[in-house]
Length: 173
Image 1 (spheres, rainbow, N blue to C red):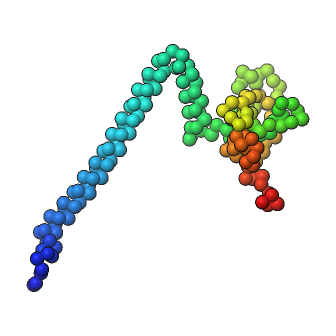
Image 2 (cartoon, rainbow, N blue to C red):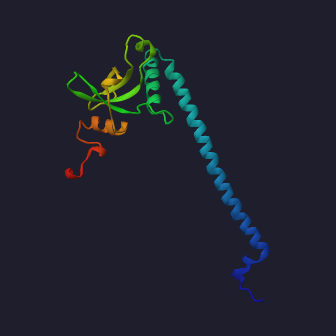
């Protein structure tokens, strides 16, 4: 059979040789990428752990760092829903209401001094919701509303300008 010189690489022995070289090259490339990712992950993790240990040993900084670290890890933990419900709480007096986030039921040490069931709520301040008032309220004084914690935070940060999507009416559009 007639085969031009440039198609000689398609013959059986040379085809196996070239295809094996290409497969080895691809596998070597994938292995190198995987090894680099693994090394980077371990090195980065080790550096963060080292920095964490160093900061925790500095006298004044360590107290602030530990507290901040605990708060941030609690608030942004993907496994734990910190603020599950949004309520209206009578604040600063009984005739006005503030948006508040339910933190948890009140601690037993506080609960034993009240005849009513108390709930711990956080009333974030505007426009910086990282500060606010942590209050214990009787359950009967709280009004539970249909709003997510994210919508409430957006509403508070925007000083009431960005309304929650559930409260926008068709007539307003």
